[in-house]
Image (cartoon, rainbow, N blue to C red):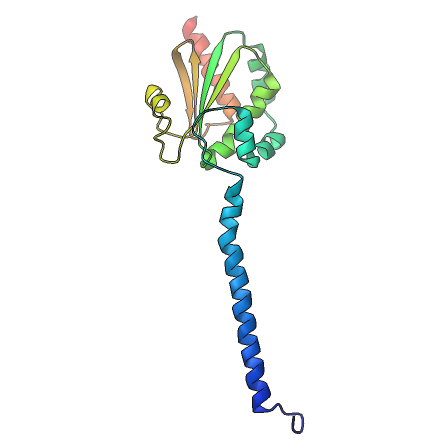
Length: 184
């Protein structure tokens, strides 16, 4: 160093060092960026066919988080708790589907709170292309995911497709209530 000035050699070494540091930081950021999607999908896999609530929860932790946070509509819970007819729900979900993650935990929580033996629920997981499981999709003419089919015996009395009009449990009550009016 001459009189407080940096030599040409020192400046050149500093530039080389800075460029190396930039490349290293870029490589680290790129590496984490490439690993992030794989790490986030490590827990989650595409489910297909009949599945249990427990399998859905084990496959994607966001369901459990949303279930814990969800507060079902009190009037809907009272109606469903008092509902005496036997009803089957066929719930078509996609482990890849944003709407499934958003709305189905509310249904799960509601049915958990209701705890009725009169409501039989079956979850059917659908692949991303909505082609599997073909037998269920064709039998019930499923076009949208999620879809909640409400059956009395073998007769469909209503369905909720993609997203509810209000809350999923109030839509379910509306379907069941309309089904009862038709009977009378």
